[in-house]
Image (cartoon, rainbow, N blue to C red; front, side, top):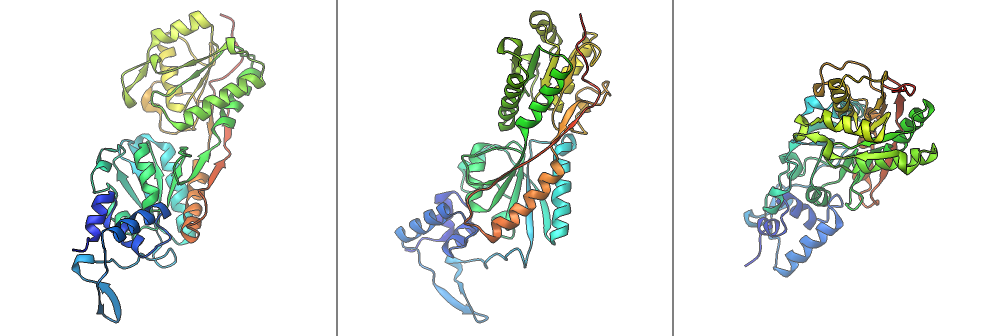
Length: 366
């Protein structure tokens, strides 16, 4: 008995539409996925029994083959996939990326649609891949992905549809990426602090791990070396500084007090704006303000992080990564990828700019 496409999809844990497209040798399906589908189909004796309808061949009910998805010049649908664990109202960064995506889509005559998708990998163990219908049934030609997704999803998704990842590095997976210049941005902040005379610095991690944190810490180390700040004079502060979890986490004031007392830190380079505002809130509880007593920097120029500390209203010294331009470039990548699916994964870094703000200044004697 011939195997059906539904059974092939179940065994390979991919969508039926992806099986159909693979069997038609659709170049938008990842070559590895096409090879797995055709190999299983051949081994299991899959046969397409076609019949005539309206002067074209279609398959019977047991081997139904959906119509070939339209190319970008005829359908023009770009999916924007956002992790459901990331509330949009707390992410000015994503809103600016979305601004760039929609404006570039308008300019290129492309429709865009926003989907929220579970960010963990639990559902990937089941045959039904948890993607929105337009992605599963082939109406989308490509997707732009933003948010904290598991490695399993980033490994699986590009095999089904061209995917462009925004702001995060997943070099081991076959997806295009548009990235912020994280290392260079942090190095610029270290230079600013050094120019103000700061020689005792700390890098403050976000509570959650992310690829860009590593890049930013690399930029911190490079900036310290460039400015002659020795390893003995800079430290890294991790999740031990936090109490609570997720977006409800806060920096413990007693931890901050200990750092000031034992290390004498005067400049704090925070992994992002949310972390910086949390740090400023803890300092405020100790009666310490920036830049009067210490200097604090962030990263992202996020207009929406004040939920972390509503009482702190000073403009943060930070880096604007140019998220709007990153969104625009992601749309161009999507168009390039659908036009030339065989091209190797592309990586583009977008240069940011320093926002001086009001939280850095000269070293103050204690």
